[in-house]
Each structure stands twice: as C-alpha cells, then as structure tokens.
Amino acid sequence: MKSNRFFNRDVVSIKDFQRDELEFLFEKTDKMKKLNPKEKDELGKARIMGYLFYEPSTRTRMSFEAAMASIGGSSIGISDLKSSSIEKGESLQDTVHVMDLYSDLIILRHQLDGSSKFAAEISEHPIINGGSGSEEHPTQAMLDLYTILKEKKKIDGLKIIILGDLKYGRTIYSLLYGLANYDVEIILVSPPTLQIRQESIYGLKNKMKIVELVEMDETIIKNSDILYVTRIQKERFSDPQEYEKVKGTYTIDSNMLKKFKPDISIMHPLPRMDEISRDLDNTNNAVYFKQASYGKDLRSALLALILNESPL
Ligand code: CP
Image 1: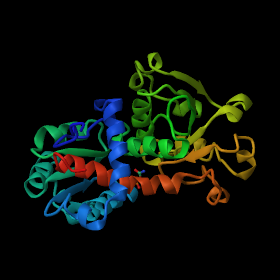
Image 2: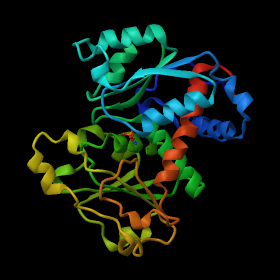
Image 3: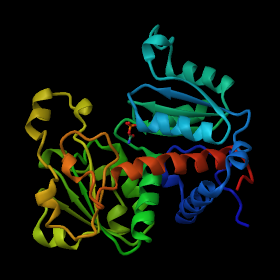
Image 4: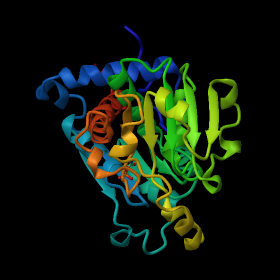
C-alpha cells in the first residue's frame, strides 16, 4: 500500500504536489465515493475544520463545509468579516494564530498573493489555500484535473483551450501548474490586456506546448478536447473603465458550440457572468456544475488524507 504523503500537510501551492501524489488523491476520491456513511464518519469524527474567508466564496467554502460534515467532522469560521474582530483591525497573523488554537486544519482565502504561505508559517495545523490573490487556488486545480479525468478517462494527449481573464484568474495558474505534470497541449486565449503573466509561467513552456492567442482560430476550435472558460475578474481591476473595455469579450453560446468537436467538455470554475450562455447548461458538453459537485468529493478525500495517516 502506498504511504499517505498528504497526512498533516499544508496545501499552499499545487506546485508542491507530484503527479503520483495527485493520482493518489484521485484514486482516494473514487474510493471515498464508495464508502458508506458510517465508514466516512470515522474519518473526521471529533475533528474541527476552521475557515477564514477574507474574500467572498460560494463553492470553495460550502464544498469544504459539506466535505467536512460528510466525514463526520464540524466546521467553525469567519466569512463575514464585519462580524469578526478583523473588523476591529486584528491582523491576519493573530487571526490565524487564534483559529489554529480551535481547529485541526484551516482553509484560508485571502486577497494577497503569499497569504497562505505566510499563514502556514504561523499555524501548527495544516493550512489549505482556498485562493490567494491572483496567485493560486490549488484545490480548484485538483478538482479540475479530477473532472478532466472523469470526463475524458485520461489527461495525457489532450488539447486544452483556456479562455478569458488569464492575467488575474488564480484558478488557471494552479491549473497550468497541475497540467504541467501531463503531456498536454495548451491554447491560451485572452484579450491582449488580460494575457497570462509570463513571470508566473516561467519554465512551463519547457514542460508542455503552450500557444497564446487573442482569438480562437478554426483549427484550434475543431481539434480541442476541453474548453476551460474563466470569468473576467472585475474585483482585481484598479480602473473600472479598463474592466468595461474587456467585459463580455467572449461568449460561448449554442451557435459557437456547433463549431467544436461534438464531445468537447466545457469547464468553468464558476461563478460565471455572461461568458457561457445558459443555453448550454443542459448539453452533454457542459461540465461546470458536475465540476462543482466533484469539488465536494475531492475535498472530502483531501480532508480525510490530511487528518488521518491511513484513512482509506
Ligand atoms: N470556484 C470557486 O473558487 O468558486 P467560489 O469563489 O464561489 O468559491
């Protein structure tokens, strides 16, 4: 049996995880889905998950809470800053320190790059990065890779378009770092002002083929297996006029869908604004809600692996 290298470990960056570790997590996610409620309950019994959300969240917070409940544990946390002492000016350092006294692990979402790394240096218990600035969202990428595997039965050999706000979208940086473990071809499509930050993908171009475009061309549309769409991150723009210029640049609708491979999988970390038309929601190509659902499954396995040396 393989040893559990997730036990008691921080999840700050997906770059810290090797391919065999990610695949171990995916296997355990499958296994977790087959356990009965009593078996699952043993994995988190009497354990407490703390969460600190300095930025809004629907999926990450709720799926972690649901995941913790599904393994018999409970959750405490802050998501409304105004109802906590953060409103009085308490520092991130002291808030993490106190949450660490009450919890067996902590999920942190914060607007600053480096926030989870900083928290991991303070906390005795594991820190899971639930989104740090425009830098990373590692558990989103883990569930994205799991979703690709479930949809396509493989990751190697796929052609993947990543479309939208590639400058500020933290999910796509973690996704690219995760995909760098596989033999994939990446097509990055974004408006010129929202292109990928070259310094953040330094070195990735030696590991996989990456093409950068401002429009999708016909060859790319016809040959790609996955279309990963992202929202323009309005909250990261310092100038609202700059947001207005790029808002609504790309919309995938049923006319556009006809041009892709019939079995293209359309993914999105959500929330979406207008970049995917609701007409697509009931097609077999729309994977984004299934992707959100896999978030709970994968995070249940991740929590069980971090909290128990030999859980599954
Ligand atoms: N995908 C994601 O991180 O969604 P939330 O911002 O709703 O957590």
